[in-house]
Image (cartoon, rainbow, N blue to C red; front, side, top):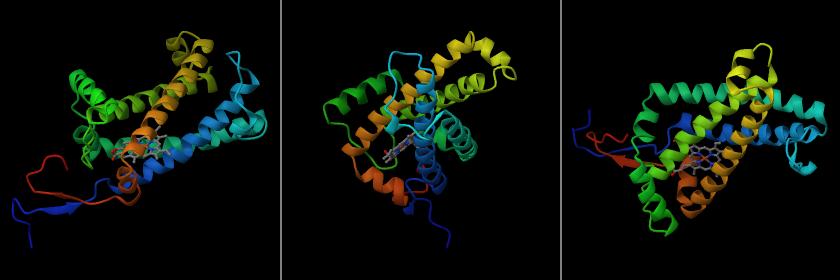
Amino acid sequence: MKPQPSSPRKRRIHAWPVRICHWINVLAMTGMVMSGWGIYNADPIFAFTFPQNTTLGGWLGGNIAWHLAVMWLMAANALFYLLWGMFSGHFRRDFFPFTLRSVWRDTLRALTFTLPHKLGQYNAVQKLMYSGVLLLGLLLVLSGLSIWKPVQFSGLVWLFGGFDIARYVHFFAMSGVMLFVVIHVLMVLLVPKTLVAMLTGGKKTVTEESTDE
Ligand code: HEM
């Protein structure tokens, strides 16, 4: 029977493409970062290297092989997620709108532990962080392409201001993603039920008129 206009019904808090892509991305990101740290160690741009046991691949050749192999998993997953997010309306509906004012308000609330959390509805800090990490991901891919194939992507290298600067951009974009992960996981720990929903999908009641689906 067709539901009445205002009859409540249940739907998943996180649709399956979001959950599958999210967890594949966590795996892929871990592989990319650990193998990337190994590659960095072979020719550091700062006065430090990453501990050997936080790297993946054992030696430079292994680090690079892992980095390039996991890159394809990450790229395919990201492409699917981005296309699905755009065409299903997920990004438009769940990541926007947010304003500087709402981000500031929700940051203050988060810092004073008074930020209410409604499952399935992102606060302004989350909206900013999720949109921001997607942009950082784009920067990682573009700077990564520049240092992987500088001849083929010479236009991109030029846009970054040269090979060496593209390396710095790649490093700082990785650091930005790491900062995101630390804050993101801390926020999840503050509201652990969000983790259950990201694993199982969860259920929320919506009415037909709801626009936040
Ligand atoms: C072990 C590490 C991680 C855990 C436990 C975790 C957990 C979660 C949870 C519980 C949510 C849903 C939040 C809510 O409903 O309020 C979420 C959403 C999200 N996470 Fe993570 N996350 C992790 C790592 C990452 C990483 C590495 C990235 C990307 C670099 C990431 C990007 C995102 C994004 C973009 C969303 C929003 C997804 C969407 O609605 O499309 N997460 N995460």
